[in-house]
Length: 322
Image 1 (cartoon, rainbow, N blue to C red):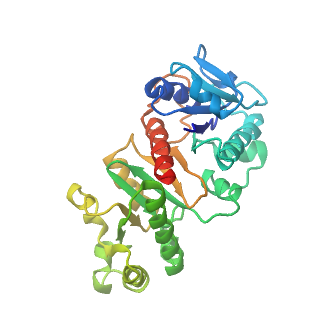
Image 2: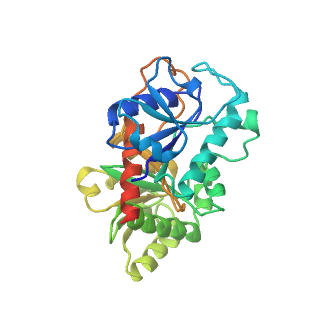
Image 3: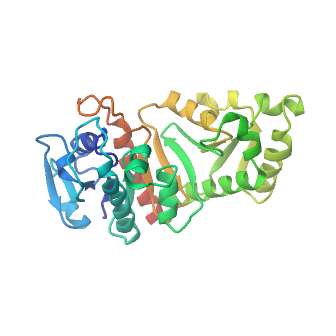
């Protein structure tokens, strides 16, 4: 058994306190270790320093195993310090190196603050996902939001709604679906994943009366992949895809834009949603929330999404191993 690596994320956010809470909840259920500076953990935190990942398996369940990554400065909850930006980046990079070397089974990443990284270290990536793809040698990746109740993949992500039709090309959509299909097999253990593809326009275009993209872009891609033997259907009207009975008919929904994917999963399972990056040569999960600087250090942050992310990382590692 290899433990999961948890990178610390923004030390002034809720990441450090959630790492302690996750260990208290999970104990030995999910062996993991935290990569960061112990000075950033809440006062009187119960932790144990380790020098290599394998030692995490021997640490008592009541203590958080910590692989020390020195940062430039201590931190005050809720107060960003750009001097610590390089440490955040180093913790992520170290986590990737350990997973790639086979010393950790998966990487779970606590939330980062992108502006702080840009201001303090010239971070040139839009976010975690793009940085991880870069570290993996330029892998083509897909963002999935997953919970026991629903898995969704937005084909376009942080794109203004007015620009989505132009960004939504047949080639991009096909790549997204293929990466998703392969990830469902490799990382979720599904031998024949069922994929539902949402339409872009109301009523999936209603025969061209409400837009042409559904018929000219989405439908041909779905038809071509179905002809190859993929269990896929669409484009489907998005407003009827996410009720309970509909969700039982597919394993993942491919959505055309950010909110079309994220609104249903955050409605169905707000605290249990996990951000998963498919297409990497290693497993990466992350809680589906931000740094929450406004509540950092107050002890009120909910650990549910981080706990779910660690559990999913463990389960995905098991599926990939099989």
